[in-house]
Image (tube, rainbow, N blue to C red; front, top):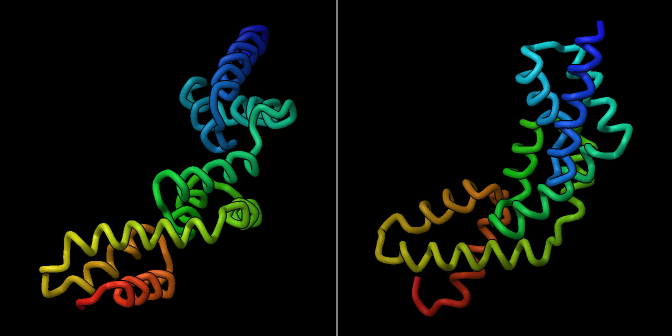
Length: 160
């Protein structure tokens, strides 16, 4: 039992060091502990519980930071952000809260900017509109958002 307690302490300390350097969600920490403890589920749960209790890991804080970063830096839309967070095991209500923290106006501006850049590279292509639509959808924006961005782009251009 002392070996388990010693391993638990080492794992907790190691995960606290990791979590103090950058944000992690509980799912990511759990995976790291499972790898380090050779699949010990009980150990993983205990370590995650301690890190959450002590504030090293907070899924709401993580998902809010993730949503802001992916939206502002990577130019992702809400659909893609939601899908990525779901894949990390974040609860739906936490994802909704995180997406509420994303600035909608700057997200629209970013979409229009990336769509314009992509349009300029496609304007000679006869299928430019379909490719532009697919590009916007692939970035994680809804059909309506992408369609509106294309319409706004065309209003500002003298040629179609």
